[in-house]
Amino acid sequence: EAGVTQFPSHSVIEKGQTVTLRCDPISGHDNLYWYRRVMGKEIKFLLHFVKESKQDESGMPNNRFLAERTGGTYSTLKVQPAELEDSGVYFCASSERGGGRNNEQFFGPGTRLTVL
Amino acid sequence: SQKIEQNSEALNIQEGKTATLTCNYTNYSPAYLQWYRQDPGRGPVFLLLIRENEKEKRKERLKVTFDTTLKQSLFHITASQPADSATYLCALPRRYGGSQGNLIFGKGTKLSVKP
Image (cartoon, helix red, strand yellow):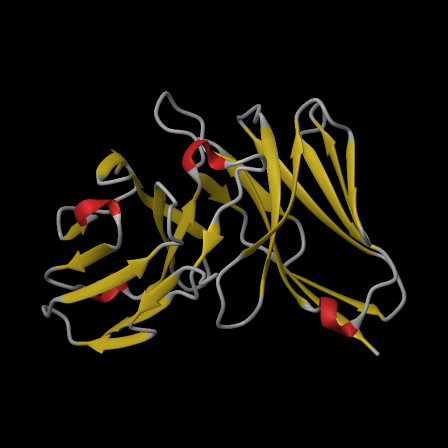
């Protein structure tokens, strides 16, 4: 079974440009999460989808970030316009409806975003 | 606000020894605590969950304890191997009235096991 996949693996853009990150969760997983790790800091929660609905977006830094999950399948996270402080590794994770027995989240490999 | 501290940024041990990693949390009484492993260039991988009513849990060479009075979890790897070298993350579910499962992570402890 394929795990969580993320595209691209790396992205280097200039300040002011737009970048869109994509996440494909494990098939059948209703829950989809976005997290971010800024250098030297811990992984921080951004957003949670249940199917196509935003369950919680309290971690989104500001309105330059827009996340969507069309049809409850893959998700995109768009940053527009990107700022220097947006640099970091963006992780996507998915989990079963209800979280499963261990509330285990399955993480993708991350997208490393560098804003110059 | 809820905080997690993993006391050591790095831990170096000799192969065959037991590695012990510490996770402390404040301002919170979580229903459970999780440990994840992260290798360079990869996302975290779930290892173990321990619930608030469990004192200890084991999985192969891994052992986790959970002391809700001390607000601390200890993560042990016995008979450590070089392949155990990785960053280990402690995670707790966020506390709020919304959805479950969103996690707060510690910064992690980078474990190096020398042959």
